[in-house]
Length: 272
Image 1 (spheres, rainbow, N blue to C red):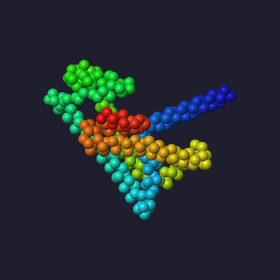
Image 2: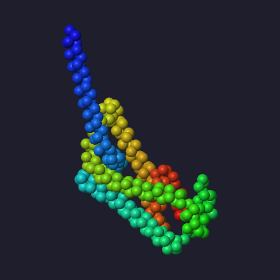
Image 3: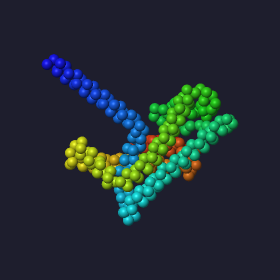
């Protein structure tokens, strides 16, 4: 009797050990797969957001083209990429030109900093400090730079990091736009899969409601916040480009960041 009990205990222990090893291997494989797809997660999510936000326009375009959905998706993708890459190339050229101009002027000793307006001193929080440093730079640029090396170093590191981040974001959006075009061609299948997943998590009725609510939310945010921010930055950038404002590309990026954060672009446009 004891031998039978010991044999059963040993068999149970072996099965438990085998199950634990299998679960550990599954967990390891899932973790490795997640690490592989992790860099692409944001790109795919943005692709979904863009495709949901742009679908009403895409639907009108495809019907105008005689329900040629692939052609409509291709035209949308090319147009969206041109809207993204065109200004990005112009802004990059402006930043390079401004940087080379500043570097040449500083090395030749011909770089002149105009004195700040009195209104700068009235800026909230940072006005007094900015006015002081700016005024010192207009009188003796070299001495001011030497005196504020730690601040300049931090600002330079932050600026380089920001530019690199913007460059990476542009690449991500290029891939996201291409993915959104693929999703638009397969709109019905993508929608059905989303409804099925939501229904599994809740029920059929609530899954459909949840999907429609998420769609409406994405479109309202994309059109109300991001759309307005892009329009504001584009118009401001075009205006500064045509009146030949120095460093207009940098100011355009700053305006875009402020607009996304729901801050008025006038914070940049008035001083400039």
